[in-house]
Amino acid sequence: MPENDDDELNPAETARAAKRWAVWAAHDLQHFLDPLMAATGMSRLEVLLYLVSERLAQIAESGVSVRLFATHEIHEHPPEDPDEEDWKK
Image (cartoon, rainbow, N blue to C red; front, side, top):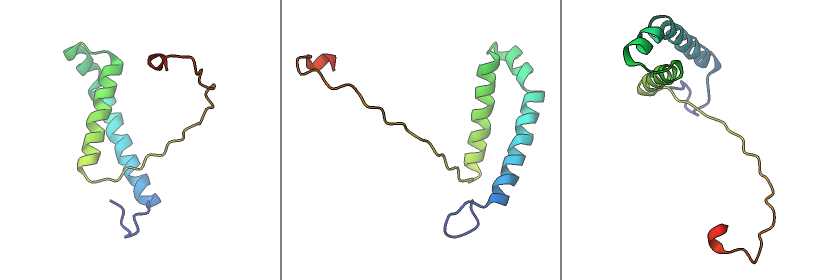
C-alpha cells in the first residue's frame, strides 16, 4: 500500500515490490513450468498464464495497489448509410 496519505506512488516501494515479484516469477519458471506441463498436459502458454494469475492473486491479497494506464485511439467511422437496415448497423 502507498505509504503517503495522498495515494501517490512511491518509486522506491514500487521498485522493491517489482524485484520481489521478479524473484518469485523466476522461481516459478525454474521449478514449476515443466512439472506443471507434464502433470496437467497444459501447454507452456496455459501454464504461464496460470502462474501469472496465481502470483497476481497473491499480490492483490497482500494489499498492493496496482494502477493501470491505457490509451485509446479514436478512429473516425464512415458516415452511416441512411438506407441501411437497423439490424445491419
